[in-house]
Image (cartoon, rainbow, N blue to C red; front, side, top):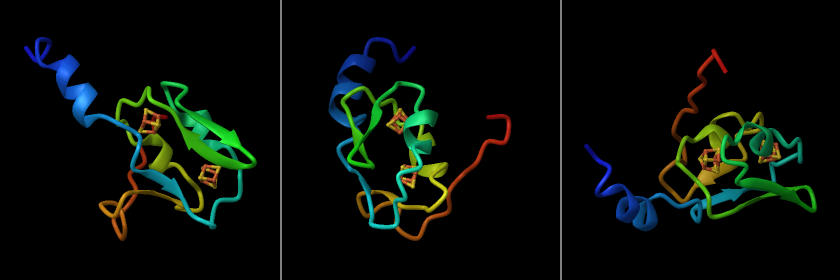
Length: 85
Ligand code: SF4
Ligand code: SF4
């Protein structure tokens, strides 16, 4: 049902631009490993997000140091783990 609007919706609203990693990052690579879109790479030990994000939130939720934020929206919010993963 959402097929016709998906191209515009994704292009306008589904982006990884707001992701950042704080100094708490230890460079473990979990964010890159968990991303199903291969959209996260480590550069100089810190994650860098590309343009192929589907907003699954695996990178932010599985960071063991809670070092990732999505702008200000995620600050103070709980991280969700899907144990089947
Ligand atoms: S999962 Fe967290 S600690 Fe590990 S590299 Fe990514 S941001 Fe850094
Ligand atoms: S939200 Fe999901 S798809 Fe987007 S960068 Fe993070 S893990 Fe990858």
